[in-house]
Image (cartoon, rainbow over all chains, first blue to last red; front, side, top):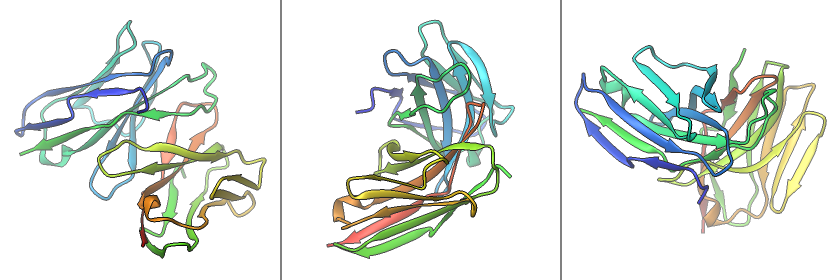
Length: 116
Length: 112
């Protein structure tokens, strides 16, 4: 158990809908990352927050947004869902240095999103 | 230039054999190279990692070999066991950022 929790575990929704995925980092970790893993694909970096502030952005669609709250949990919002958004969404946390030095990332169990 | 190319896509090894997974990169601004192991239904877990000033790092049956001049690094699993059957991802950290670039993964199956 990495100490990172994600809810829900599974989510099935229809095209055009909006969903919110939730992540609670490990105790003491200030940094949260979101990744998308499609079938037979690697992990695509979406976005990263450090202590409530957005610090890095990857291949995140405009229909997607995220935020990190004062209690350090994070939410990933996916709107106007399309079939192609079906994937596993992982959250990871780390004690990231403010200077962007590499630190170990701890991944949650993921949320499996199915868009029908 | 921010890609990490991983091969092979899948690998079948006999129990007791050596599993070798390779990764290559172009960007010299990468400064940390972790390997992750992912079992079905679970999130990736850090297995072993190396920095570019070191050519080899060993932890138990897992070894990373790093060739800075060739911009390649590889994971060797010695005495592979059926319990090692999982998907393995290499990754690279972009220096001065919070970004990690992942390879596309290698599905390893170790036959009993």
